[in-house]
Length: 276
Image (cartoon, rainbow, N blue to C red):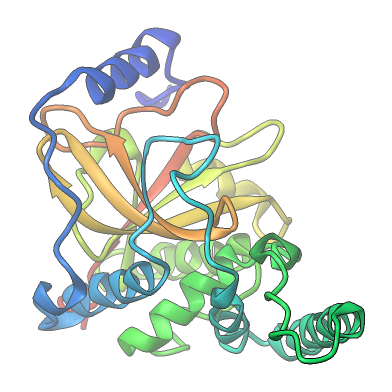
């Protein structure tokens, strides 16, 4: 029987209490310019932080129901740039652009002559299709990760399957090595992934039996660790690029999310600086 099984309520609640009650939590990471960019780990973490900075450095503890401030509608163009990184992107971009232009044209017609241009539509209008996987794909490309190593995709399950297959075929040489979240402490440049399905997976090995099937998942790029936290940047988190601060145990391993939140089922160790 696998040692790592579905976490209980006690561990999840302990993580919440630790996050809420600790008075010495570290601050968010420094601005992107201060993050070392040497090596693929540093380049990937920095690429994610550049986008986080562009969205206003939105930061949240754990699994927020709302952001401290809403995302600026002006970031619409950045959402389009993420879609440009994946094969499905051109069709999505055309659809979004047509909707955007039609909305602005309709608002402009309603304004009196000489009035300033209308405000851009809410960023939440572009939340579908979900763009979190396109964000990860875009960040990977901007960091210089080759497409044959990390295949850009509009769904997390597609590139996760590719990374798992590569690791199964070459465990020692894999560019991204999968780990159970309870067994590995993430470092900047790694990815931490959760399963958002109604009946979620709790271990990456369970995915091997259903490769190719779609599952709603979500991955974030780890940008900082230590001090009882795993800090990670993801896209389409409450319609924005957000840095979330997840509670970690004394060894730096991410604690299980609360029972009503998507469980972490894999951490991908970034070995791009080591793999042959």
